[in-house]
Figure 1 (cartoon, helix red, strand yellow):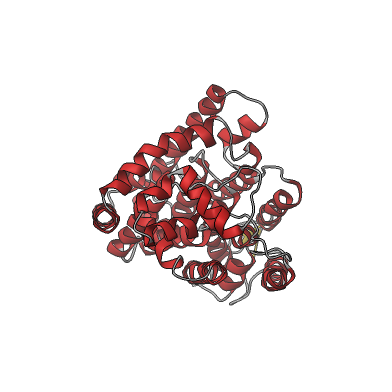
Figure 2 (spheres, one colour):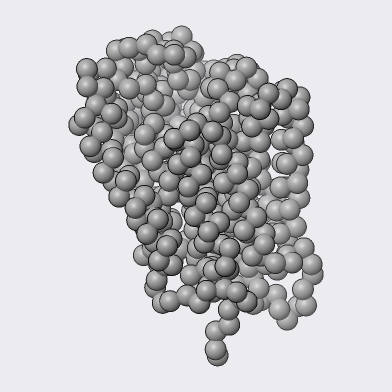
Length: 409
């Protein structure tokens, strides 16, 4: 049967990505691949030329792990104790004074493992080790070798590696959940259960799973999450969970009320309102309206006969739109949504405006790095718009005969 393409779409070539998209991703890949080795030896990454540590987010992971290894895991959430370890590692103070540890206790397993190694080895090892599942998931989603290029050239890679954050792991778990959901629901649930190390992503997945009756994945995720909580309580004591819940309101007050992290670093609608001078109440009002709208759209979309790739992409970007606590490195998850769109575009062709829009999405994080303007929300909204536009009239009921074709990935 002859293959048909959407009107105004560019016809794809076998095993080939559009030239412009390939060039942009390949250039960004080369920048990422050369900048960090060169900076490591020139005093621009991890350590300064004078031997002092460069203050970045990874220091809180290493410091929390060190406390766990010393037999004091509950102290990882104590600001003063955590700060003392960080100062000892980096040998200098800095504006702000510390990087807070606010992850649930299961993530102490990762921190404790990394803290067994010297700081530099742990930093580089963490970046490399977490990059592997991310790039493999991206390759699987795209379905072609270009997935490797897209993954390594995604601009948030630079930000994530620079500060040693966990964006690769988050993207791998979100992408793994969505990729495995139709074919390996139990494994998808396990990935989702591990994602509970980032509680802010826990709102939409249960809603969507219930709405689409994905009960196997729902139960698998719940069992995994409970098992992780129980194992961490055995390993680090109930005191660790008590410390986590005790300090959680303090973190919320500091970062979402007082803006200790500075509003320009956060990329949510709530933080944008605060960045522009809006009040806390106004910020929350905008945020909850957006969150409600995204939840409703996702429920309708996932209950519709639209093909799975659009549903997965929408859920990935939806998780970013609905959390108020969103740093640029967290937008690594946007790579998952882009990968699903690229997969469809490579198979069916790209609409005339899609490649320029994706190019703009790739450039916005670079604008943030160069200017400090919080443009992450704009990138998320661009991709969300592309998904909904390409998905078509997903809110309408389609004739039964057309559902199988539309639902094909």
